[in-house]
Length: 589
Image (cartoon, rainbow, N blue to C red; front, side):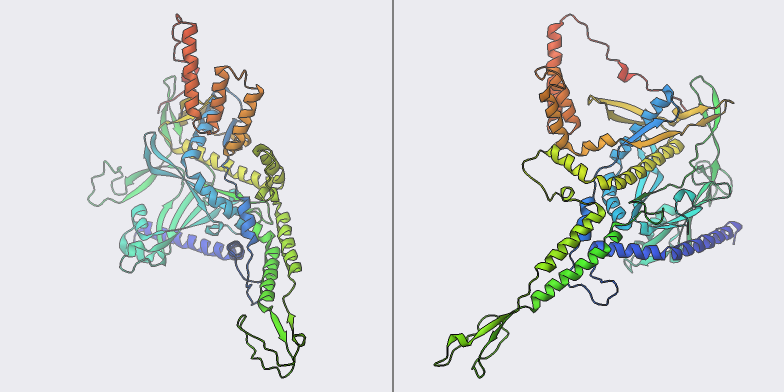
């Protein structure tokens, strides 16, 4: 057995011990999260009782679903210390993250993120650089994963990711993925942790549990260790450092190696050669992020700082009580009925059938000799109590009828109703701020990954305030700065927030109404002027009004023809304007 394999086995045993210890320590939290999810899904369990509820009125699901917000925060980037170059770089970062916000599957992730956050109290985002991604812009790109808090195992007793020395992520993949991604031999798969067998005849389809550990070494550098059961998959100290694949036998790269049976490994690259604008060539350390690639979104601040408080826990008593009341209502109704009263000796056969029973009177008997007892219960108080509990649960979480759309009227405009909902949801502002904070950290980590790994400039399109399309690029060499001693470094000191005014883009109908009102009131200019009408349709196009783009093109053509008619001898202007000017200095590696 080689020295390297011995060290790997020792490290595997160490990380497994840490994982098992952290998993055992988090079991109470995991059990609470399982109970919260069961409640959201409509569990019939009654706390402290072996009996089950016969009726589940799932107010938890109804209330949580009314909180779901489809808005994806829009990034806004500012400089920590102003200069023209830094301001241009801030705009480049802002446009980069905005472009990725449109390309990455944020809509799908947000849908799950919203429910995880309200049910569990938080959700976990994991950002990684995927060098296998290729497009016209260059090699590599960011991948964004959303994990349930059930799949995040933190270091015990530490309430903030940035303070942890290690943490674990749990993934489920297939055996074939292990072979493809990590180069595992098929005969070694018996050491992996198979969660279940997909097909006895096809072991490559087995579901396998993969544990990813991020840790800090003695120098504070982030490392990554991946394993499944007793099978080590990846050991990468200095996770963020640039790696170069070499043969362990000859020390050459994959293209130069001529060994019969090469055994490849990775070595760290510390510096790169960079050419500046003035022609000077320098040796510059690669940019290395210092954070774990993990962001936790909290619901609201709870007893611990790692996750926020769960909405399910806050209304659990109301959910339990309303299940008991609704079950009692059903029991009362099932036991109710009409019992006949008749004189003794009456020749009638009693039956439990609802219909078909005929009572015959004897000769000389009066119909008044017979009667009935109606045992149909009064459930009005039970219904009132159930509704009271439901209103109580909504008040606990700050959910109003306006937010749920239960007080809709036909006499108010869409804009007025939107303002009403905004006022009604003011108690939910803390949750919104927690979401914004999480996305600020996500966008910052995305920027730092591109600063560390994106060698080629990334070119992408964006629209200005007039709706015109432009092209710009993100070039990591634009972020090279020098200190007072002449030492060069990558400047990552940018402030990430979200554009709160951009939320309105998800409320298109509201914007359409506002734009039309502004046009009619003349705030955009003379509404008979084609320039004013073009500006109006540009705003509508930005708000995604149907066929607005065609109207913009129509008025643009109309304005151009009028301009040519008014000034037939005017020479065409140079098409090279400010919008085509170079946006900041560019360095070429």
